[in-house]
Length: 248
Image (cartoon, rainbow, N blue to C red; front, side):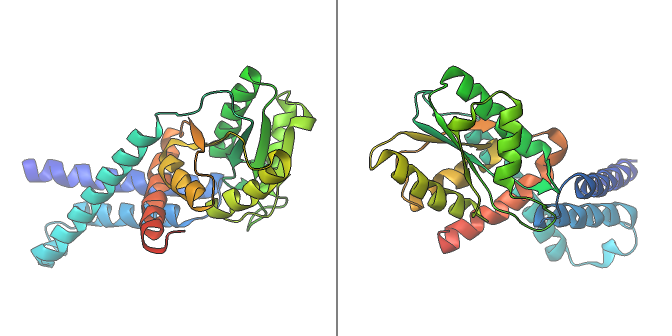
């Protein structure tokens, strides 16, 4: 009975992961996180469906490595989310950098909209702050992310004079490199700056900000929509490993 319940449970979990990956593919740009979630869903579903036949023939060591990998990712995701929900922003920063997160055509993804909503909250509390929207144009994007972000902020009532577009960046590291060039030109050597991104991205973004020369940067998080958590966090775990290896 226990074996049958586990078989059904794994099949359902795998199917839900596959379905969620398909939904993400429809609503956002294709990325490694979506692909990884789909592969994981297929693996878990197959494990459940064929546990008594095909899977039973796989060496225990290989199955053990698979489940250890799943466990390591789960722990990593928990740590990233836990770290990211604690903000360090004071509210008195001279500037706020909103990190790009992909658009579809000219439309904001849910994750990017949430980042901008948080930036609007900060602006409403401190209308003197400068908002740098950072993001270039990538695949499946008809305009730069920065332009799409600027349009949204204007619709939310942010003064156009308080918005600066950074339209060259194609990565988080470049977000900070190019934004720092803008900030240095505006304020000289001394200024206070914060960045806004999703909670799972806070750790890596903060590390890259320091590598780019923004040593005292603070941060504010936006919450991640539930159905984007798994692919976003899987992708982020891979990016954190890359950061540790290549320091970028």
